[in-house]
Amino acid sequence: MSSDHTPFLLVVSAPSGCGKTTLLKGLFEGVDGLGVSVSHTTRKPRSGEKEGVDYHFVSQPCFTQMQNAKQFVEFACVHDNSYGTSRGSIGKLLDDGLDGVLDIDVQGMEEIKLTGMFDLVSVFIMPPSMEELESRLRKRQTDSDAVIRRRLENAVSEIRKAHLYDYIVVNDNLSAARENLAAIVLAERSRASRTFLSLQHLVPFV
Image (cartoon, rainbow, N blue to C red; front, side, top):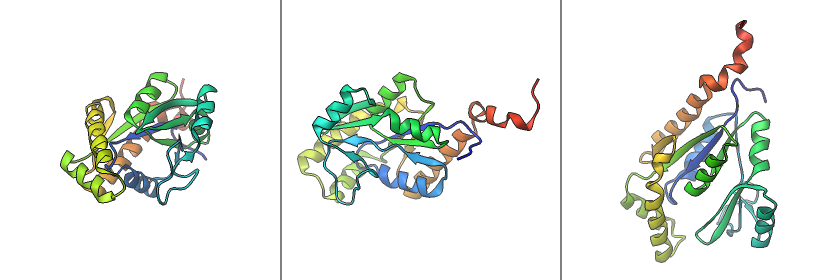
């Protein structure tokens, strides 16, 4: 795939229940040239989730083996389950000229940022309020009260680190939030640092 810019890695994080999955689905439907980096997890698949599409679902021994082989650029334990992002998954997307999209938590974003391995753009999806976040979690009817309380506690910790991201998108209105996320991608593609080299053929430089 040809590209007029150097591909970058878009990292998107959000507290559970903020609508991140829906926003990313809209992003892929509205913007071409994106590829998703599918993470590995030991979590059991939820209803409707597909192997190799939503996650690579693996056993804990398999995950540990990959971890020991240093195949992950970041990994973490979240809600008693292991999650990891493989170096190969990201590298292939960028080599193919696609902007990689990575859906990970705050801890994972910090780890990838520290490696300095990728041209990184980070976006934090923010709920309009904690009350609305709790309402969305309860409407899913997939978690117990204890799990919901833990997710809300984790959300507070994650929101306190939102300032570490390049962008914050508040998901109050789904359509507006989706447009904002797409605008971020398109603007980042036009950064001079990513387009200058690919456009040198237009003007002779001395």
